[in-house]
Image 1 (spheres, rainbow, N blue to C red):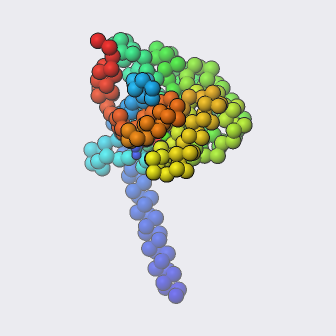
Image 2 (cartoon, rainbow, N blue to C red; image 1 turned 120 degrees about the horizontal axis):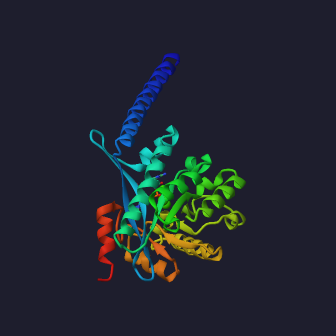
Length: 279
Ligand code: C2E
Ligand code: CA
Ligand code: CA
Ligand code: CA
């Protein structure tokens, strides 16, 4: 039994070592990718449910490593968060959004909102407001066209601090969105204190909306809750016409999802915008 225990121990520790090594390799590749600006921002269109026109886009990072291939943000974002690299990445995405957004405005394209994901680490550090102000000033991009997405789980930081950070960000003129809504535990009293503009209903409620009555009722309740709190509501992960029709009935304001388009490179998004511009 004793030797078995030892074997188990060695096996376990070997595995940990392999995992740790893999992590280190990935982290150093990520560091390089950031330096060489190999992380690319893709744009997922956001649409007005009533009119069907594009009103914005969410920036989603894509990383194609020359050797490792495509690496999912679900893998490298947590790594970036635990290694501190998220601050560099977050800064790059924010800059990219404002520079690209301003370039499209200069071209005469219709003004749209660009939404950027903000990790809890960035949100909690205390210098986000300064960073946002600087990027806006340098790019000339109007604050009201920049939206910051904070996940509901990030709101679980110290309540007073969250409220203060949001108020400060709001004063810069940017819009604030709460991401993955419905997956956290924010109380109504708390939500009411937050200067939010928009709730993004988590796609897990949208996914089963047509098949599952509970999920449909939850989606409906979240939309109504958002409106009661005077927020706008966007449904994420809309994949079918059926889902869209239900959301229309529920008076949801906006949607994004594969039904219209996945996240696409800037040039392709620009073409989508041009297509809907009246000649
Ligand atoms: P998220 O912010 O919830 O982003 C939405 C995710 O849902 C994206 O996955 C998007 O491609 C996917 N999606 C969009 N429409 C559909 C649909 O109709 N059906 C399905 N099944 N999925 C859909 P992605 O791009 O893999 O990103 C995963 C997560 O990585 C994001 O979740 C976000 O938390 C994080 N992330 C991505 N880019 C950034 C970034 O620049 N900064 C930070 N902090 N996080 C990022
Ligand atoms: Ca998001
Ligand atoms: Ca989301
Ligand atoms: Ca997510």
